[in-house]
Image 1 (cartoon, rainbow, N blue to C red):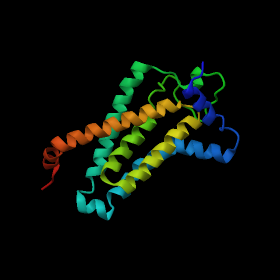
Image 2 (tube, rainbow, N blue to C red):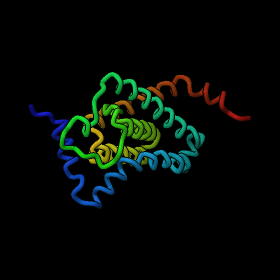
Image 3 (cartoon, helix red, strand yellow):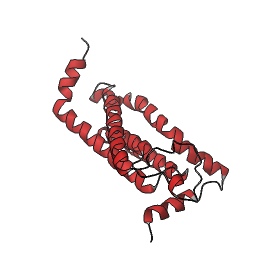
Image 4 (cartoon, one colour):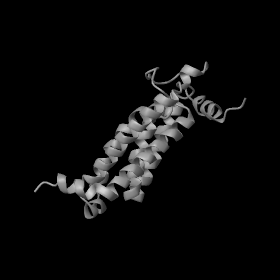
Amino acid sequence: MFNPDIYLFHLINNLAGRIPALDTLGIFAAVFLLPLLAFLLVPMAFTVKRLREEHWWELPVKALIAAALGYGLRTVVGVVVARPRPFAALADVQPLISVEHLANSFPSGHATLAFALAFMVFKKDRDWGLAFLILALLIGLGRVFVGVHYPLDIVGGAMMGWLAAVMVQWVERREWRKIERALRVR
């Protein structure tokens, strides 16, 4: 029976191991782009536009809270779904990176974290947000390329990240000013 998720996985993953430069880019996207994305919260927070609108630290804090919340949601869903990683479930997959074999594949934790950050940034600044969304997509594509996630794992991670961002925004609208007053140093 035709499975579009496995078909797309093979379409992307079969490119791995053919061109060393492409493998290097795929591994970079899958492993190192997420820490870079988190680091980019700092210069993004210090843009002139950001300084006029709010305290420089508010958006990075909210984005990191969304990422942590999203990862918590991802962990619960991962335990319930318990989907094995492609290299554990399919015979013809050799991952380009080493990951914990027992970790669940759905949803992708990397995608959840990346998209939570990206959606929080996009809410405040469309230019930076678009750059963050593109990087989050590249992280997801890299995770499929190196053989550790299916495409639907990435979609699930994006949905978890979006849900976490929405939850943080909801709390922000209702409670952030109280939290901000409590944290304000005088």
